[in-house]
Length: 160
Image (cartoon, rainbow, N blue to C red):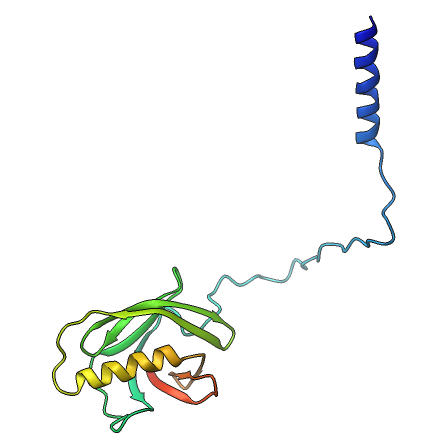
């Protein structure tokens, strides 16, 4: 009988404690959740215009023949996995990227190592150097500009 009375007392205290409402502590104000008006439609479109687009390299700003780009050099920013893929004009190119607003950092840049004829190896080295130095981006008139930490152009691409 004593056990039953004890269990009943504990249960009634527990039920009372669970059903009582406490007064909010004024030292810790509760911020209400924001209410989104019914007429606002949340966008599901990608945030970055540079993603999922084929960008063909048209200029590297460093080097003697910066505007003489061999065909086939391109870059594609894949939104699904935050990876880049492309070509240096000779070898395949891959890596990752992290972007926030106009800031971007390309990471883990690598390429295959097939022999590149004449100027291809120079272009490849300058291209990879530009990608490693990239800290920002902007798009103007279907052209993508990759920028270094000073805001100077390191590479120019054209949308394809």
